[in-house]
Length: 112
Length: 112
Image (cartoon, chains in turn purple, yellow):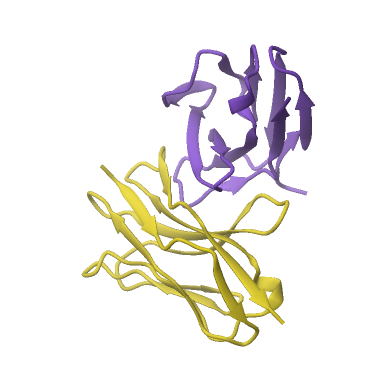
């Protein structure tokens, strides 16, 4: 199936740990994103990569570091996790021409 | 800057009722407009889109018309079903689509 897939779907971890979320798309899209959805369902863009190059880096703590080994993958690494990092993180991709995102199914991160 | 404002929820309706979820936008240039739907526990799915003024997007009985004069893109459905219960996001795709602006989401609860 063509899709944006992200793993894991659920992640429960303790404060201070380091964790990664992986994202892969097989749609041939050029641009990939990470969004954070808070408890009120508000979506906020974190990062955007176009062909492995960072093009958007919103006001996100340095503890969050995206890595794009190739244009089909955009992983999110989070250091020193904090309670406030608990949220659902969505990966997405768009073709260069835009016209809408394809989203992954989300990773629910719970920091305890 | 560009932004999207949509009505706060939750919206609670009985089955077969008429649905309207308001969405207005602020943008420079000529953006494309979208509605996304997020079913419980799932990622966002594109519901419909409109790429220029007076276009009407439609899908699964939902409709929205791109109104430049009122800067609106209200979502409507003539007869909602319980299965339509979800969170609905209005979104704006700016000039180069490197940034999407999402509304805050409106939760719809449809009761039998």
